[in-house]
Image (cartoon, rainbow, N blue to C red; front, top):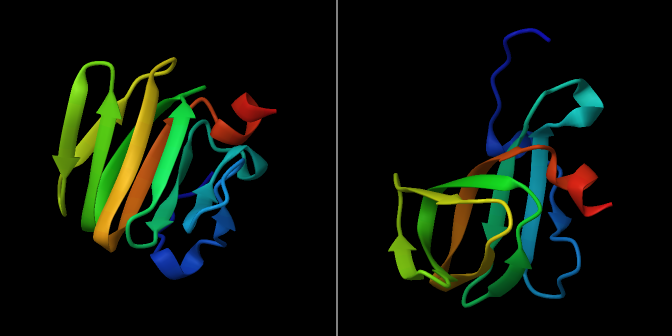
Length: 116
């Protein structure tokens, strides 16, 4: 794999698996390109909610808007420039606020393979 640069325009967004809301994920690096990790962008419409038991370790960087993440440890809110780490096995509820949110994420291993 060679050194590459990506922008949000490079992501092909798909509805987040198993969800009906306005929550989308767009990988730019994953197993299909030989990457050892998955890297991509997330897009949350206003006031959306996503509940998930994580099959992978997930790191989310908030680029725009705000998200709140609830877990058994409590709730945190993160905004632009902040990073949220969500460990494998944790059940989380990710909520966007009124302005929606754009995030970047890194998962290990690949989230698509872990869901299959």
